Image 1 (tube, rainbow, N blue to C red):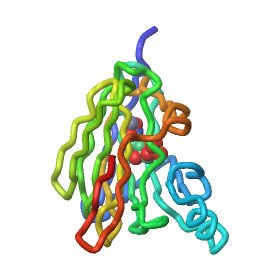
Image 2: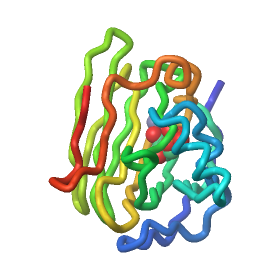
Image 3: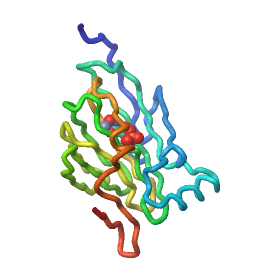
Length: 187
Ligand code: PAN
Ligand code: ZN
């Protein structure tokens, strides 16, 4: 099968906010869509009941999800905590485990959590200008470790796909908490 011949395009990426214009998809993840992700179930339920805050949004200009294409999108994670645990993305493996990804930090501060199926793990601090490489076979999740929205650009192969199931059932080996001394990664 040959790759779809697309017309070239250029988008406007706001390097200060992460806004991508135009975009064809915007996914907003409110806290209720992150059930089981945070350790403190009572704090989670209370925050959902109190208004179900927005945790993060992803903006993307869609291209076909096929080999050879590159998907470009931005993620903006709000600042906040659930029982002291910092706001984060759901986290996933790529369904096609043989695909990596590049993240570029734009705004705020974050931590990229990585884990393999064998339980190896790594943590990469990110800020504006950080280029982080997610190698194939590593699950990845980002955490906002600062006081303002944490924004980053992601570029990954069109055929990658997202496998959320393994993370929903097993979680990551690391959790990141906000403390008076700053963010603390606990394993
Ligand atoms: C990113 C993520 C994005 C949202 O574009 O999809 O940050 O995180 P979740 O997909 O875990 O909710 C990426 O890694 N794409 O492959
Ligand atoms: Zn990914």
